[in-house]
Image (cartoon, rainbow, N blue to C red; front, side, top):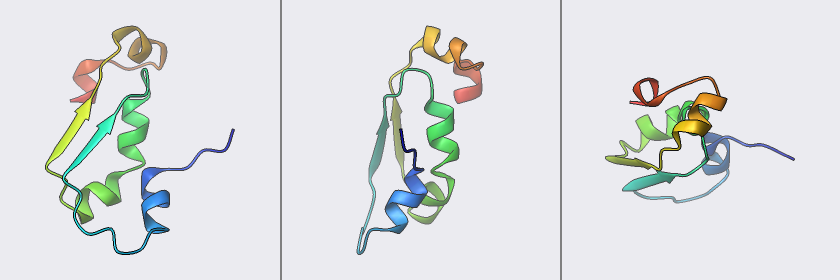
Length: 69
C-alpha cells in the first residue's frame, strides 16, 4: 500500500485557499497523520483538528491520548 503525507498530497494541489478544519479518523495513527501535516497546519493556520479517538488503537501504535493532545 502506498503511503503519502497530508503535506505531500496538498503540495501537489493548486489554489487550495483556506483550510478551516481537518478531521482525522485512523484507528490509532492520528499522531502519524499530524506529524505528516505539520507544514500544512502551520502554513494554513488550521483552526480546528478533529480526531476520533480509539484508545485501543492508540495503545497498539505505542501512544496515548495525552501524547495526542
